[in-house]
Image (cartoon, rainbow, N blue to C red; front, side):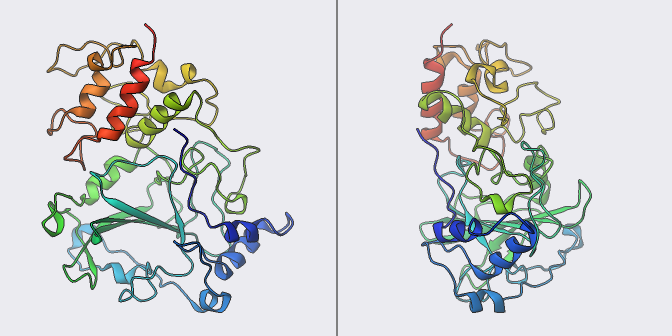
Length: 350
């Protein structure tokens, strides 16, 4: 299965590559003000984008109990018409995180004149002031919108939170402690603590915008554009499984992730990966004994050729606070994801 291409508008890309190599950061900011990616491939008029000035956002301490609304973040020029602000870049990752079937949209805001530090190709670092939004909806009803914001130069200078939409969708309000069954759905908005639980395994904190997830990212957005785009190694079935596990499990299952104290399993892809058998996903799962987990007769994380005897698939199918994977933010197993991983495991050889 070939990965989806990021939703970067072709006209926007053409504008990015139309100039020479000097003063890249300044030109990137100028063009970001003038040409704007739109969901349907449109480009906002230059004067429309140039007139927009996003607000200076001072997010509150989540423990202070202070009311904070999505309308204060600059996601929309006018929240009443729900039209994303013209300086935002809408994107789509190559491999999606399962969210119980919710529809999602994502936007990136970089400060004018800035670039993403991609000198470490596996861990992009975003400039101070970067904002990343992710909207969850179901059947056309907005449920929540999440925000990650880099607030300072330190490795922990990030702010994260989930905003739950009012029933009339006039605005969305920050819920520091999260909220279950948002708007009478089965969707749960995460607490600030859970946001950091999932994102702490990536030094740059952003999970959906990386060399693996955005292999065709415009070079003008990066400080060190790669010589070639990253491609997940292996045949279609293998690449699909490795990409799926990276997006859904690799944020916690990596050397810096939340799950590391409990298991040495590493499901994160790296740009140096050229052969599927040499990825950490393969080396730490295929034929490797399970650790700690109890409650089933299974002994191997991935029993090659036998998906139903593999602990990884068993945990993906389970739902319950002590057994399911991912452990939070899901109440329904991902049938498509299970099928992808099952095909990969059944195709391995003992």
